Amino acid sequence: MDWKEKYKRHILLPEIGEEGQKKLQNTTVLLIGVGGLGSAISLYLTAAGIGRLGIIDADVVSLSNLQRQVLYTEEEIGLSKTACAKKRLQALNPELQIDEYPFRFNKENALEITRNYDIIVDGCDNFSTRFLINDTCVELGKPYVYGTIQEFHGQASVFNYQGGPTYRDLYPDETALTSIPSKELGVLGAIPGIIGCIQVSEVVKIITETGDVLSGKLFVMNMLTMETQILEI
Image (tube, rainbow, N blue to C red; front, top):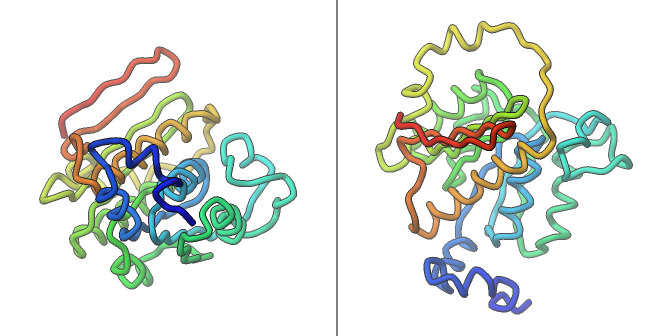
């Protein structure tokens, strides 16, 4: 494979170049959740030339996923998301090493799995897992690339980056958030694609050491009004 030709459009960017592309190929990323956010994140990380990607998710593909989880097809309904994701991503980038974890990210396995990766990316959909991701990243000194979506809204940030703020600085009251009753809400199918791509951009910026990383900042988007804000944390 002619890697210089494959990643030509990255290499042409002075901020990335050959050196930056090599950094991408030498970086390991753990993606927690391969649903709506995770579909976009995994596809674009794979296309970007990340060297090793861990994907963790206990779920199977369902019909209602397909409106936003573009990694999957109707033929895969009922099958493991991580298995289907691995097959699709490997076809996009055969050089990529993919570690498949078809189970939940929890207190028993968090440290053991996370310590093997350079950057941790949030593709999950609940507060409890986000607090666990944050605390694990803080303990291990890993950057945590955060994203969340709901209805027509999305947020993104980078926590625990070079001593910067953590998820608990944004949401200090874990008990209040995790005690909120779970309720299924709608989401515009394109929203996870937009936020997921922003998360990938932050990963690339961290690896190539270019641009202003969203550390200490919260990107907020309202798709109905096309308003965006960057708030200080």
